[in-house]
Length: 215
Image (cartoon, rainbow, N blue to C red; front, top):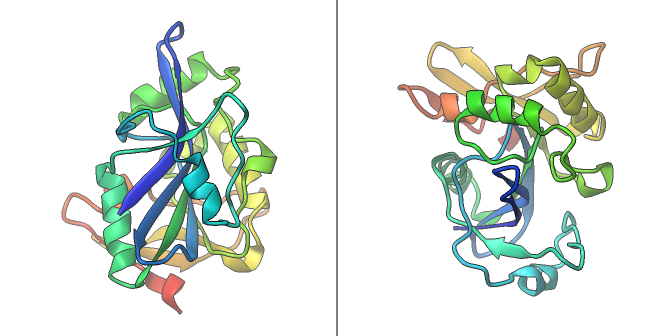
C-alpha cells in the first residue's frame, strides 16, 4: 500500500496543504474510484524525495502535472486511508484510488479544520481548480459527511459533483443501524448529495461495505 500527494507548508499562516492524493495497492495501477472527502487528515510526508517522475511513468489518466516549484512525495497512510485500502483490497486485486477534498487544508480534527478553512479561505492552495479534478471514467464516491452542508463547503461539493458523470455517481450511505455502503445516487435539484464520512462509518462498531460499487 502506497500514498502519494503534493504538499505545501505556509509557516506564516501556520497551515499545511495536501492535494492530489493517490492511494495504490496490489500489483497494478488500475483506476478504481475517486472519493470526495472533507479535508486532508493526519497523513504526513515520509521524506522530501520527489516521486513525480515515478508517478508520471505510470501514465495515470488522472495525473496532474505539478508546477515547476511543486512535486509529489510519498506519505504515511493514516487511519482513514488504511480503512479504505483494506475495503478495496478485499474486493479488488489492486489499483489506485484518488482522494479529493472540499478544501486542501490539513487537520484531522474536522471542527478545527472548518474554523481554519474559514480563516484562510483565500489561500491559493485551499481549493483544487477545475482542471485538477479528473474523475475520468471511474466511480465517484461522495463521502464528505455532514460538514458539507456549511454554505461555503456546499458550494464546493456541488462544484465537484457537477464534474462527475451522472452514471458514475455514488455516495457513502446508511443501509441500516451500524451498516453503511457505497450506493448509486442522483444529484438533487440543487446538485447536492448527502453522505456520511468514512471517519465515522469505519469506527464506533460500524461496518462499511463496497455495496453497489461492485455490481
